[in-house]
Picture 1 (cartoon, one colour):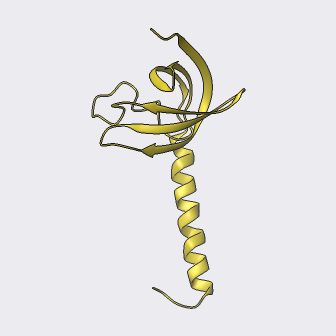
Picture 2 (cartoon, rainbow, N blue to C red):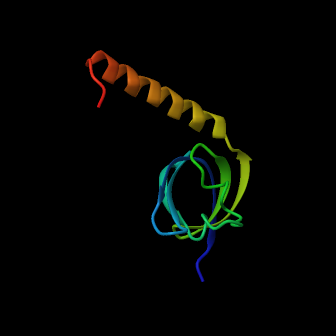
Length: 101
């Protein structure tokens, strides 16, 4: 049986890889770790909020698999602000180019 590793970090990238699985990049004091959270997108999954982008948490890992997390901060508002800013920038770029597509 593999040992459990505890790391504290922030999710800087999250990518859906199967119907209910997520591959995340966690920025830790030691550097970036790429991990998988199996079943994290199921409706009642315990890891669902822990694997959202910009979430700060203490993650329990077995190898590269996230088996648990203690969430310190979720920062969902940042994600909404970035999407809003990105859309405004996109609209400005297309407005300056003089045409709608």
